Image 1 (cartoon, rainbow, N blue to C red):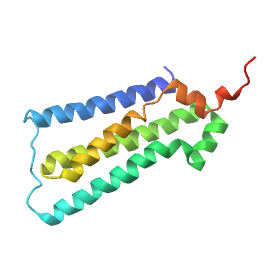
Image 2: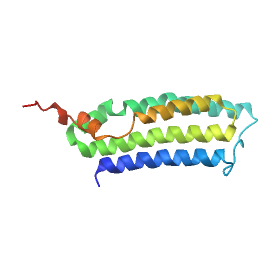
Image 3: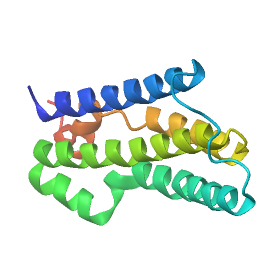
Image 4: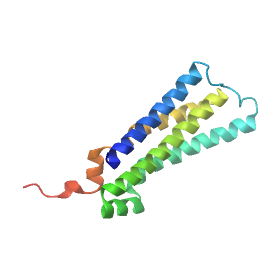
Length: 145
């Protein structure tokens, strides 16, 4: 199995894990609303969610264009893409899981709710694909005959 397939599987398992957490909280299997009441705690959790939403999703979406990953992709090709796609999946997965946890732990955080929606939408643009791998490793730069 190639690095790309492992990354696609990891991305799918991350999405399934988030969906399972969502379903278990909605059905009442996992407890919800246990971090409510204290405004200071709510404020800190809202700031964490906003920072993850703005920084984490932006970083995940732009990761392949930063200097180090771009140079690594140019030098090592598909092996480097596998590594950086795994990092990107981990970053966007962390954002989604933390925001999902905060949303269900407080049940009063609109910030966590909106940040979660933004992170889920951003995650859709982070799915590892062969086309992206070819584009980023410059396999499609060869002239057509």
